[in-house]
Image (cartoon, rainbow, N blue to C red; front, side, top):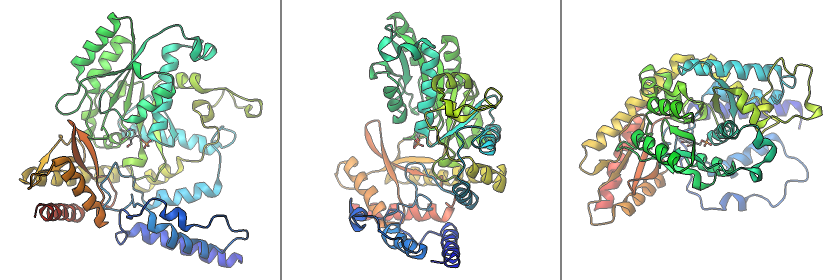
Length: 471
Ligand SMILES: Cc1ncc(COP(=O)(O)O)c(C=O)c1O
């Protein structure tokens, strides 16, 4: 294949990307595949001699694309969206082309400094100051690193030397709620906090943390000789976007000398709107905060940001150098390898830098404002309907609801069938959760391309399928 052929094929791929980003509504959102279907259709071995770029891309279109669930589709209303706009997609190509490694300042001065600067921009845009930001691949990794810093703070430098097996019998307690994301549990277990250290705080009717109960639990834990170590508050819980009262929680944490970790992986982006930011009052007092631009700032996977108040604590938890990584600049400028598990790090922040520059802050404000009002349409329509009930308040743009079966069928199984029927059409894709031990459907508005047309289309389809199932 000649250079000219490659250049033409690359332009064809770029044209496809551009037209896909412009309009991907012709695709099914969920592909309706059976497990193993894509795997089995691929050859058993990589080809001995290569193929042309045209051929490889054709094979992607015929053999892989049909098995894709389209998170970038305006009909995607499940989990929390990850949608992308043109500048961030272009930045991914540029970042891969320059392929710089941001492990050390020396290994990528611009990669390091643009990450620092872009995360300063991001925190200001969300109304925060005084934090240091660092990116990881996802919210789970960000929380893992935050909780490792918390552990470092709790145990002090002796732990580094003595390790898990040298511990002196501390009984740390971590306060969570039933709404806490499972990445927190996974991180804590990995970090040596056994499940015995989990203390579940009661939730209020809106699924937010009950701070009276938090105080009661802290007091009784202290009486029994256990040491409160950390409260994990969530701003935008995964099930129903519940917002914990962070201001009250922060005061309690300060009085008790307890680490406050705020998981705002999804909800945090909405703080770009001053009226939403009011609901987050107190998050600026946290020790660590997670925000995922790959959820609600229209940045493609993967990009999560951890903001820490005391970067030195995070560094104490992770730094361990090697001769070949020492540089003349050490001590004068920080290197990201000291702040986490990964050594090699791609230039992940370039896509955020491209996007913030291209769109400007107003774009994000308009989009999130639009999402909140579109979600209100869903909520109001289902609240008015006698066929549905609302299952949780709607502080952000997620509606938790369920259908009331016309027949005597068990509501849990009816709603599961309803979800499968909607997803089976390929037009919309929703997900479920469990609230108050009932099977609940979730509809999320956070995709960059969602308009009122998609909301009305979803509501009509939902009502139509429900009626059909009743008859
Ligand atoms: C509140 C919350 N925290 C953490 C996560 C995990 O984020 P990630 O999937 O980027 O690891 C999620 C994912 O949906 C989430 O909703």
